[in-house]
Image 1 (cartoon, rainbow, N blue to C red):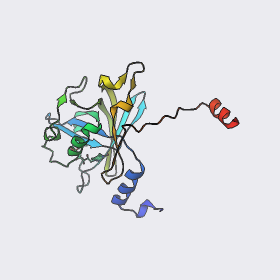
Image 2 (image 1 turned 30 degrees about the vertical axis):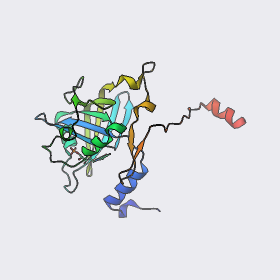
Image 3 (image 1 turned 45 degrees about the vertical axis):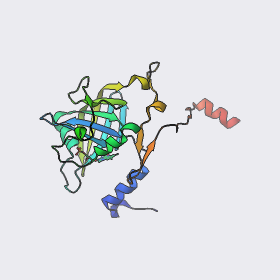
Image 4 (image 1 turned 90 degrees about the vertical axis):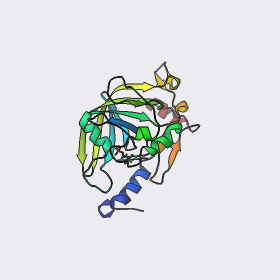
Length: 213
Ligand SMILES: Cc1cc2nc3c(=O)[nH]c(=O)nc-3n(C[C@H](O)[C@H](O)[C@H](O)COP(=O)(O)O)c2cc1C
């Protein structure tokens, strides 16, 4: 199949792109409106973009069916300029899915999913207590392109449960953390438990030696 996107619908583009750009990490974002009301929602258009500065990006489309009205998360981040990205593990997957329901703005997904929160170190927005790791972020900028908002955030503090840290690096014990990733739009996810394989990076010298043998 080949497709020129000029003649494709938004739905077709969505279906194809999210199935091809996969697996994706999931940012389970906690945010707060100016009145202090909390919100939580997952976003898999997410990755880290740099380490110096430590930058993350989240792609948030506008509310379904109501073009140009931002989702609560995007509005909150614009207004308070703070958010927390919580990592989704296998134990948290179902609660994360509840937070993806398009609830009215006044409903708090954290309460509905019975999720406990705990204070952050530097930002007012709390983090999800059960998450294996969380990134406290301050908004650098929100870029509006078409019907999307791309939130760029600077990570200002990191939390990881001790059981998932090798203090030597410190490294994340990713095999133990059991993060889940999102696949296509058909409700498919991947588990990372017992699925790791190792492939050390090669230097140019290593590669040349391999060619000779
Ligand atoms: C695993 C998962 C990933 C999602 N990723 C995105 C995403 O990257 N961008 C987006 O706009 N919506 C995404 N959604 C949908 C939002 O989570 C959903 O619209 C949510 O209700 C937004 O909440 P809010 O209005 O409280 O911000 C995703 C949903 C799920 C279940």
